[in-house]
Image 1: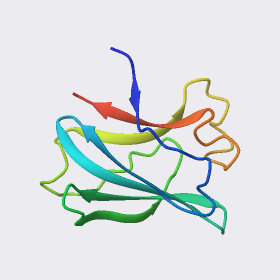
Image 2: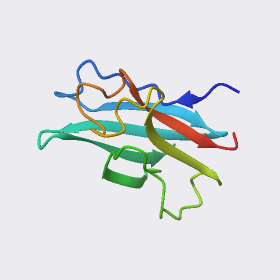
Image 3: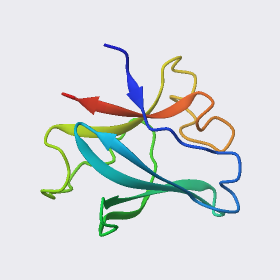
Length: 111
């Protein structure tokens, strides 16, 4: 199975967060990815009605963004993990320059 990742639009993200609805393992979730002018990306997640599940969490390379989040609205056994398949970003982490060009938000788990 091919690896799936979130469809982030980075083009105007410095001015306006990218907000989109997508299906993750049969559950519709709203994602909002924003650029923090302190030098990092942040992710918020909402259920399909717009109620917050996760707000403003820093996107950290190699870290499951759903770790330590217990919420019945999230699909069981699923994670969102920022990774670079070439491994080039492993030392520098997530930067504005490599985000979505090489570092993508992969959906991990049984889907």
